[in-house]
Image 1 (cartoon, rainbow, N blue to C red):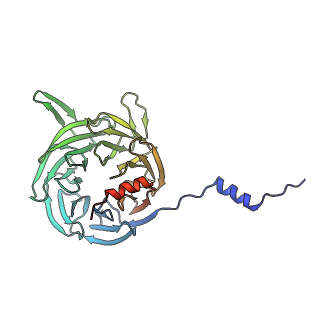
Image 2: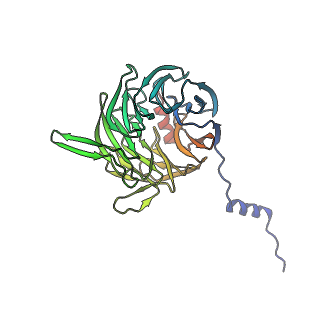
Image 3: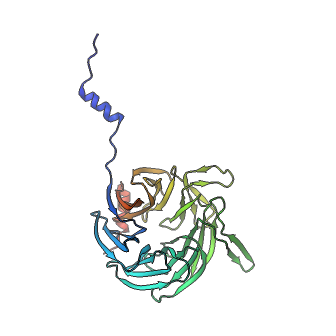
Length: 367
């Protein structure tokens, strides 16, 4: 007996359910190789440094289009924003420039003797600018007076607490042949070695005291092969992404996740964000209770900021540094990666519930 072929509608249904259509590809923009990216305070403009071209690239995060390029008399590398000022270090040098945020016009420059500057960080509206160099030294710069202070802090990566600017955190992925001291009282001091053992990166917490930075706490097993650190918006959680993931010193078995620690003591591990091979970067949303860990540079895993459980996965272009920013008042993820001779900037709208939308609305500055 011959079997009757199934109706075409059933065949189509079977195909669609077996191979569900992939999500629509996010908008992408190609540019010259970039070293760093920052957002303007209104989160509507993305600024990238292109050192090889000696340029700054301005991108409208609403239209996802390039708006202008600013040609500079130096090669911009690291970037930081405070108020209406954009700070940019010079590739291969110890010079930092203060520029007008909107125009890119140079207002001041600060010269720091020693190794080239690697990273910059500051509070968004107040306080000093901090810089790390290739020797792991940390400098505090008063942008108004131009005074530069070499602090006792050490580190290669650096972030500043955005709640009140009272703490600065650094990360060490390559050994520094020095020791720092935690002063717990007149007769109680703890020496902290800065040698990275078995690829275990270090995170340090410093209290701001004028231009000085005083060591307050340390985490000597932050990540394996550390890449970058991130601080939660409330300043209570800190994490470092590492290409090797994280491993306990006792069990030794590593997991390709990102460990999250309590900043109050830097010792208490809050939990771990699952990622998979290999974690490239981690970030926390500036308002909402969520974050993003980037897997292998081409998958953005959105996680809950409290439980650290994965909420969603978003496909994205591959490459490093896989830096994540939150544009359009926190409603859109922006990632930039370098691949070959170009940078790819991708834009990914966040799927937000009514409660999150209301939180973002209330967080907007009052007119």
